Image (tube, rainbow, N blue to C red; front, side, top):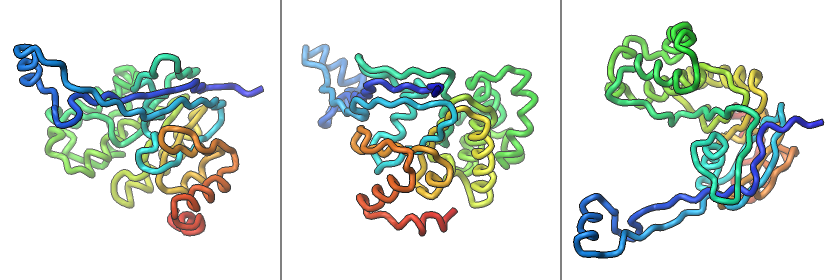
Length: 261
């Protein structure tokens, strides 16, 4: 029998943008509305995920594809518990779901060293484990002596490499990878690709979002094609769905995508 690890049930995710239509809704404008007894700033709702449902089992490697703005990253953030589901929908997981990406928040005013420690603790690592893995994380990132400097002194590439090194320091039961393969220069991409492959082998369930469709085809046992916050296709015929997606979006033939790997 299948062993479900992720159940997405009628999931809706809505972003609420306050002050739409030119009224930014700052503290000053809010105070003036109170003084003048005006109505509060307008609220615009963006329905990013629209009632999707699916079940993922232990051992599945699920590729999530779609155009920019289709809801891929929002879906992963919802599964990771970083975005709330609207009333009536829910996400259930058998363990902690970890989102591995290059957009993890680091604090510019703290040194790289402090960011490594705080980032590892936030992932649930014990202080002793953080201490044991600290040098490995720094060496993997390649930031060298910059580790003792505030993050604001880092280049964009250095900050991305450190983010990835922190996020990849721990194995996870449910691992979600959001565009992490695009991190850093060619040498670091090769190293990060190898680490992601290792993490996939250690994890029970993996979600992968990547614009490189060759990576999806090579790595995934199932693919979910999203469009406008909904699932267009959900199939274990990964090459077939990729062909359909490329035909619909005017993308390159899959053979050219493979050649990039």
